[in-house]
Length: 95
Image 1 (cartoon, rainbow, N blue to C red):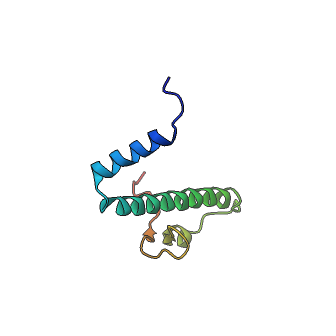
Image 2: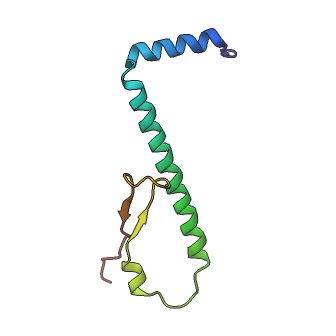
Image 3: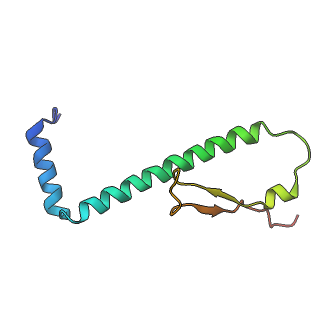
C-alpha cells in the first residue's frame, strides 16, 4: 500500500518529529523509553524465573515464612534507581 521507506522519507519523518517535540526533549524521551524497555525486560525475566522455580519446588507443605518474605526486582544490572520491593499478594479472606 505505502511501499518501502527510503532515505528521503526517513529524513522527513525525523524533521517532523524534531519540530513537534523539540531538540531538547528528544534525549529525555529516548532515555525514558530505554529505561522502560529495561524494566519490561527485567520484569519478564523475573516472571520467567518465578515460573521455573515454582514448578521445580518440592511438593511439601508451604512454609509461612517464605510467603511473608519480601523480594526486590532489579530493573537492570547496576540500576539501583529503579529497583523496588515487591510484596506477594496475601489471601486475607476468611473461609
